[in-house]
Image (cartoon, rainbow, N blue to C red; front, side):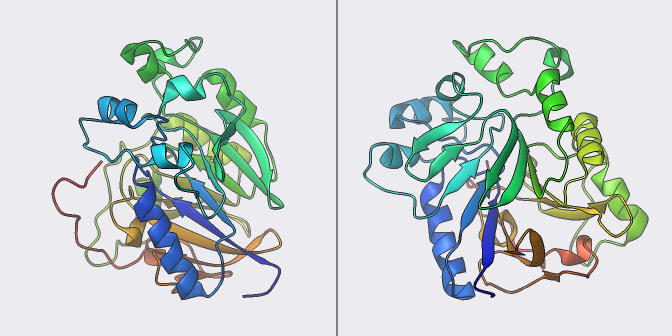
Length: 300
C-alpha cells in the first residue's frame, strides 16, 4: 500500500461481540501488513455500559456483555471505532448526545444523523430503521422498553438533514435501501451458492436518501446478510456493501483502501485478499464465496 493510504474497515452488527471483532482486526492487519486506520460499524453495536444492563436487555439473544470492560478501562480498543445506532442499542445512554460522543477511548458514537470528517474522509450517517408510524413523531426519552424501541427508528427531520449532504465518501445506514435485489437481478445472475434476498428487504426512505445524496460508497447492516450492488449510472455509481452480523468475518468485515479520497481496492474478511479494484464493476461477483452458516446459537 502507498504510505499515504488509509485502511478503513466496515463491520456488521456487532451485537456486543467486541472481543472477536478486535481479534479479526488483528488478523486483517497481519494479512495486509499494515495497521487499520479507522473502523466504521453499521449499528446494533450494543455498547451497554454495565454488564448486567446488557444481559437484561439483550437476554433474548444471549449476547456477551463485553463492552463493560472497555467502559471500565479494563480493556482499550486498539483502533478508532465509530458507530451509528441500529434498532438494538443502549438508547438511554445515547439519547442526550444526538450529535455523538465518546463512550470509551477509541469508541465513538457518531450520532443520530449528520456528517463527520474522519481522517480526511466525509462520512455521512443515519442511525435507526424505518417505522412509518413514528416517522413524523417527536423522539421521546427512552424511559421504558417501549420508548427505547421507538428510539431505534429514524425521524423525518433526521432524514432531511442527511438528504441535504453532498460529496460524501461513505454513507452509513443501518437498514438496507429498498430494491437492492431487483437492481442486482437487472444486471447479473447470482453466483453459485447465492440466492437473492426477498424483494421486500430494506426501506424506500433510505433508497431515496442514497439516490439523492449519491455517496461513493454505502455500508449497511441489520439484515444479517452480505450483499453487493451498484446504484445509479455513469462514471461514478454508488457502490453498496451490505454486511452480515459479526458471527463470522468472511461476510461481516469489509475493508476499503483509500488513496486520498479515492478507493483503489477493497476486500471481504480478514485474509487480506483483494476482491475489487478501482475500474472493475461492483456487484454480486464482488462478494466472497459463500461460507458455511454459523453454529446454532450464534445468530443475532
